[in-house]
Length: 254
Image (cartoon, rainbow, N blue to C red; front, side, top):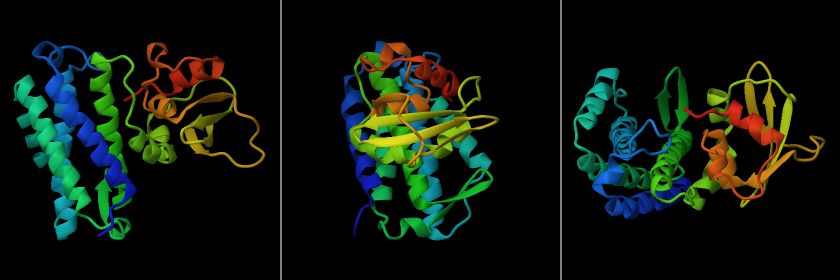
């Protein structure tokens, strides 16, 4: 059975999380994560409850059963909110491991055939897998950077996420004044994108004729930018400029 590359990236992100959590002190668990209105334990609880809900959904799709309903989601959130910080941390790792292995058990060729309800939309298995990867990778960074300001999103995750940011950009982007388009060039991996800011915000791959880049940065930083996690304190050296400041206002996080 072949595993999708996003599964391999998900496993790398899980392994990094599993290595990080045991190093966290009780004081760090109740201290601020990124963003600071969340504690580290609350962020890990979000990873854990999301894993439980994700596994319920994946199991239902694989079995051809009805998707979990809102009441089931609420019960999971209530259960995790009631846990103490240390339990939230430890059990988040365990829950994420179970969901990671469940995704690993789905053949890569079958993923595009799966259909998941996501609000009013239906998305395929590859999309749902990558959304989980984004959730784990970015929230793991939220925890890691609270204890290590130089922390980075796992590169294997970046490689999968960077080409699939259009939906997130559309959801989270807030139109602001300025030039209608920004051409962005990334490294590691090398990509070119166009972010259009009008009545809505869109992101697409650049094509011939789009012109030179007005913002260049590592792909890891670009992923964090679109997810609202590229403040000045956590921006790579040499990445600056008017367009960066504007895009920070477009992508404020969620």
